[in-house]
Amino acid sequence: MSAPAARSASTARGGDTGGGAVRGGGAGTAAALAVEGLVVGYAGAPVVDGLTLEVAPGSVVALLGANGAGKTTVLRTLSGLLTPRGGRVLLDGDDLAAVRVEDRVRRGLVQVPEGRSVVTELTVEENLQLGALWRSAGRAARRTAVDEMYDLFEPLARRRASAGHQLSGGERQMLALARALISRPRVLLLDEPSLGLAPRVVAQLFAVLRERADATGLTVLLAEQNVTSALSIADRGVVLALGEVVADAGAADLAADPALRHAYLGF
Amino acid sequence: MDRLVLLVSTGVARGLVIALFALSLVIIWRAARIVNFGQAAMAVVAVYVAFAVHAATGSYVLAVLGALVTGALLGLAVERGLMRRVPGATPMPGMIVAIGLVMVLQSLLGVLFGPRHRPMSPVFSQSPLYVGDVPVLSRYDLFVLVVALVVVVGLGLLFNRSTLGLQLRAAAVAPEVSRLLGVRVPRMVTIGWMLSSAVAALAVLLLVPTELGLNAHSADVLFVHAFTVAVLGGLDSPAGALVGGLVVGVLISLVTGYASAGLAPLAVLGLLTTVLLVRPGGIFATKEARTA
Ligand SMILES: Nc1ncnc2c1ncn2[C@@H]1O[C@H](COP(=O)(O)OP(=O)(O)OP(=O)(O)O)[C@@H](O)[C@H]1O
Ligand SMILES: [Mg+2]
Image (cartoon, rainbow over the protein chains, first blue to last red):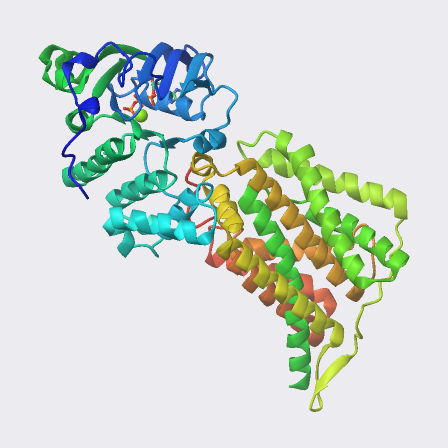
């Protein structure tokens, strides 16, 4: 796996990216993913009330916030698992309201859900095949796509015949990420991929994300409790509290702001 | 000894039919988390159609096709028209609807065709074949055995070697994750119902010629046996359905042959009780819970 090394100027982290502004090659560039006045919740009062957010193409945005801040709720709404009570979700400017979960995937919006999302009864190989299904027509094309993932995540290659429930937590998270990447998403939503993983594994996974963003223009929205690691690869950080954006700034600025860190991130 | 060979080989053929029907229950259980108590009644409706096709065309192949197609369409209708509208948080409402379906279908068949058994002659002879001078199973039982084996192997290939099978399996155990990977889960549930009803219809079609004949209740006992088997083998386990079907088929054949037909249900019940005592996890116990 490659390190999160060189980065093109257009995606370099810096202080000029706050305020939710769309980054990229000049005026009129559409956000890859945009949320406008999103209202969503469960029974009772909404958990997220009027969230507005934009993610520029090819950028990595960290979605931060304490437990219960609403990160998972936002991601599940973006992927279509939850239906918003108000507001809009736009992918490349298209309203996704009428697009079902399985069709959002076909449009390039892929979510890696919270926790162990590996299908435990299927093998590693089968999990990857499943991820490649709709994208790569034909057995040979799928074989190539799966083998690329084995090259990227070597531990998975050694365990290709193991059932999902036989994998370690880190291997499962690698598999979940590989299975999402194999469908070549344009926008990837990740819900706490670092949960329970060794720092070295977290660094590896995040390095892959950064590399994909730089090399292929993948757009990443990364919900994380692991603030330091997330900000180290992110261009921008958005801090949620009680379903509202309380801070939105360049990743370096956010990491360096002691008041902000103390108030919302608890370190 | 000769008698044992005959009874065991006949039992294996019977057992495979039970296994087929049990497999159909497993397919629906895995796809929709419902024990389809309506399976026997639906299959009998399909076999009535096959009966009519046979009477009209004289072709057994067309009759088989008629049963399969009607079975699949019934599965489609029941899933789309009925089950999809049932609240799905727990298995119970769906099972109650399925029981209601049995009553409606069996009453309808009773009204339309009356209580009499319509005999259906087997396509092959029912007198035993001989290996040397040892009687083994009949030509018809051999036919049943071959057809059932082909279907079991075909289902195995479908579920384990095809991309459709991969999606069916994933959608069954992890519907939410599957949707996030682009699998059209509701379609997979429908396909599961269609596949299951078609297999059940075939099992009943194979069975009817060796029983009293076709009647609204022709498949009731088969359902009880297959349900027992599915419970024994684990409702989630196709292999369990296959092995369980063979065991119950041979058991019934041996008890009927050496003791009396009247004791067979008791023997099946005894087996069920024993296995549940040894593996008290019982009816809905599965290896692993669903992962969202
Ligand atoms: N299924 C649910 N039903 C009712 N309320 C829920 C449900 N899921 C989450 N909530 C509530 O919504 C709020 C936001 O939860 P959410 O899971 O989005 O937070 P989060 O930021 O992902 O937290 P964490 O970092 O702990 O994962 C919390 O107050 C939570 O209690
Ligand atoms: Mg969460």
